[in-house]
Amino acid sequence: MDRSHFRMRYENIAGSLLFTAGVLAFMGIITAEALYPGYSTARNAISDLGATLPPDSIIVEPSATIFNTTMVVSGLLIIAAAYCIHSAFRRRGLTVFLSLFGTGVLGVGIFDGTYGDIHAIFALLAFLAGGLSAVASSGIQRAPLSYFSVALGGISLLDLVLYYIMLDASPFAVLGMGGLERWIAYPILLWVTGFGGYMMGHSQS
Image (tube, rainbow, N blue to C red; front, side, top):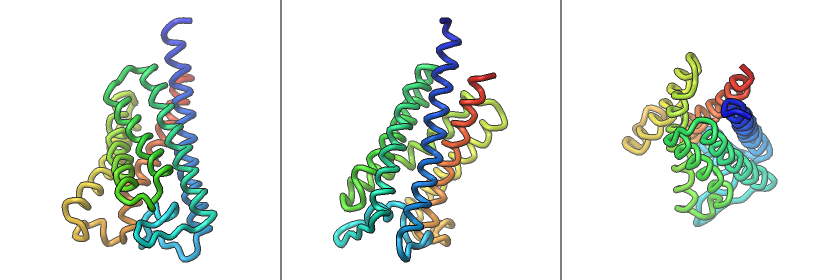
């Protein structure tokens, strides 16, 4: 088999893994929210679905198990996809960002909110590396998806940076802490799903 055949195979596998991770993360979050009494997408952080922060952490089942399991599986899928993308394209920057993104998502699932600062570090890693992955992926995409990837990654990174610089004065803060966080996380998940679909389709062309 020639190099192009292996590249298409790895590209197809990577696309399948990313598409699955994106859909799984979205549906896992939606399901956990639906089963969490009184949950507010404006007031509650996404990670509250797994457990709220200490000292008085609140764990609501089955939402916690659903959310944490979803993050663990999604993180593993993204890490596996990073390996396949590296095997297909040898783009070191994208490989590193995507691997760190998957590690962050995995860590969020393993170290829920009860772990405090450890959880926060993994969440920040997931957000930052996820946004950078979206931007970096534009280098192996055709337009117009390459432009959408930069836009989605840029929105996520802008929201993240403005929050850390301006805190409650961030223009995204009007959406509440939960809404602000979703404007960081959801553009990344939309990119993951779209990029996965693109990879699967491109490998067949």
